[in-house]
Image (cartoon, rainbow, N blue to C red; front, side, top):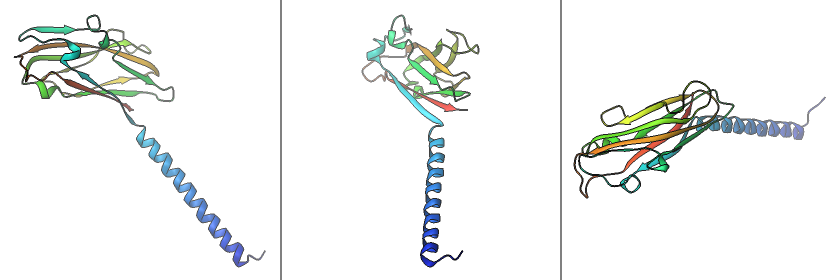
Length: 174
């Protein structure tokens, strides 16, 4: 079979278009894979307005019983297609360390999936003077929930005392 010039040009053009289409699809697939590995879930702001008034030297312990918004404060849904994820928690507690003797944020399991953890068990604690970054492995698909418990003791309280702490929650597929 003899290929004429027009057919030859059309064949080259179709091959070129196919290569571009396949390259674009592979690039899009790779981009989606990378962007889905770490997902920022939420940033929680804990401030005096939501936690109540602080008194110098007073240790305050707040749980979901005193402040309902601390109950199920973090919710993570792990898809069936994922074998496990790390729940990462980071905070700016270092920013308030000059003003507090104690500032602990205890993260407890309030709903678990599988048998690795128990409801009420401590998942991690964010504290002054400790490594700021905590990670918890969630090893089953389903919905996981976490309560927060906050303990504070201010060195001194005045209008310049910072009261806001931010906790950043993200999930990373492992």
